[in-house]
Length: 353
Image 1 (cartoon, helix red, strand yellow):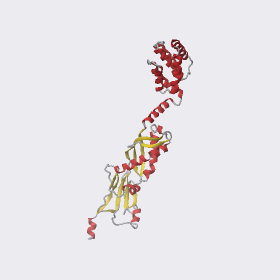
Image 2: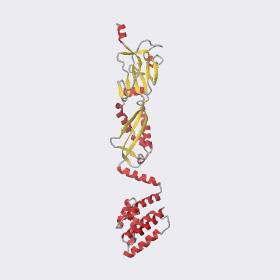
Image 3: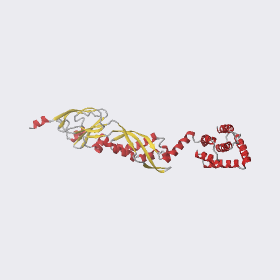
Image 4: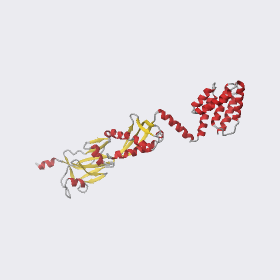
């Protein structure tokens, strides 16, 4: 009877796993009613690892290669099964294969804005998204912590857990990067590197390694986005405030050239362009002085404007803007022609260069 049972058994000569491309991380070789033959062959392909488990205890781990199963290649299993120097009969053992290739284009993102701390703005709400890639590097740890005795463990079953790890560590990554909040959008690579570094020990606890991580977008609140746009504009002209004022002045000139009536409208346009409250006050004062006394005041203002236009190069930008305002007012009153105004405007612009 024992001989018949032995004959009915199926013996495994070759242990191998051909992945079917469905995104499987771990797969258990089907051992029901079968035993592994003494001297059998284990084939572990590139991007795979194999683990022998004896009665729930992880034994030997194999990387890529072809192995003849003997006591020399199975030292831990030999010890657990109390084999002597050589086992002769077939044996049962659970064999798990693990895919160690990169699992790419794994998405992460903030479904809702998350609140982070910033040294400049205090609490700030942030949205961000990107992708990452990882691989199994410690199959023994992955088996004991994640996949267990399941017949197979797909990539999809791990997505939610890993995405949660990413979101949980965003605040720490921002703090660790040393980047001010307004610089995050302009330094996404540095932010991604800091986030990957923050995630590394958390992934390692379950046998994984972060291979890459990208931050594809950082969405700032609207009010902070406006501040960032201004900062980018300043970066285009450097830290030279004189150059920045020249840029603002050049942007304001078309406003003055338009047929504006009242001085308040002109001043309002200038301030709307970012000239500032103080500059607006200077312009208003100069305009008031130029308009005092009716026609005589207008002539005096014209003379003052002409004198200002003839001043040496290097005048302050706010003085040029005040002069342009006077000229615009005189043009609107018919004291200066369009040609005269254009000529004076060219002269003033030359003094800013």
